[in-house]
Length: 213
Length: 213
DNA sequence: GCCTGTGAATCCATTCACAGCT
DNA sequence: AGCTGTGAATGGATTCACAGGC
Image (cartoon, rainbow over all chains, first blue to last red; front, side):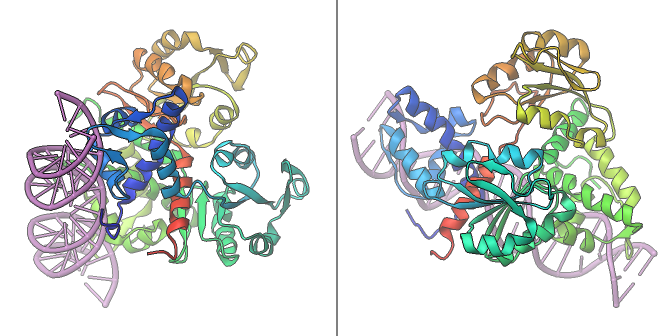
């Protein structure tokens, strides 16, 4: 398929969703899955699954379906979750601590190589085996030295932009921002925001409309 | 403006984003804001801000801009974040505990009226003043009695569908799902998924493409 | 001059529907 | 018969560009 075509953003998001059901199928010993079945598991349409995958190649067999193991491997390769990306986390309050310990990072090949906080009581303490909290003032120096790829921001929104700027300065090109603040970024960098209050507000909106016009 | 027009989903999400910058402006004592300035703060385009707001009415003054206080009130009314919605949370591990204590709910008028877990050690303990953990087996009965509007799911993905089904059975119409599992739902209900690993995978994808074709 | 509100134009994403393979 | 891969059609969302008002 024309590898030149621009790939819809929504396609990448969905492809990331396909992973977990596929892992499940693999565990259950299912070897082949149709777009129809995968779509069912992911709550999307089967044509969507086929179109999404077709952007990256022809992974299926006509008349048969997709090999679960192969498809998983392909998707991981496409997403780049099969290679080691180096992470730094800034802010180790409740949220930051919980994040660092989340198994999602290890399940991919991602690895925390630095942790920062500005609270003197926290500096020097251990978050994970081998991961010691360093002063936020050293973000630029340490991240540059460690070759950090992805920065996680888990600080109050008032500090988010400052932290982001220092990460960019250190050459970090990707940021996962858990603070509810829209950070400015250089064109070459990518920021993903994670803010559950937006979803919450959507629910409230939905409830408010129900039964009305 | 034609209140009949279907409102884009993306518009609701953005309108929820406008709130925080507006609150900030209000605190700073700014009384009027232009679509250009608000767009800048929210990292969107000014035409987008105007179009989004125009779906709900004419809130601005030509040649001047929008009154910050009025606009905030209007947006809160649109989203329904100015009324009390009753919440129940299921699953009080790290994530659930942190969630229940998150100030975002109180800042809106939302109120936790029930909490559930299946761990006997947790049942009977207090999450928030007046909020005591009850056994998960009582979800249907308690949620019905309490008139719960929104259910928060913070259990392992293997239990997510079961919990969701019991919430729906109790008449809960909206679910905020923090487990990485796509739950099935009745047509009349709404589910919002919060899964940061999708954002994380997007970043990995972006990093993998950089510098390539 | 500056700013909103909005139809029209454009851009992007999803879905259809079927040719092609097993 | 069953399923993929995909061009064409449809449906949605964003952006343009300007009329209308301060």
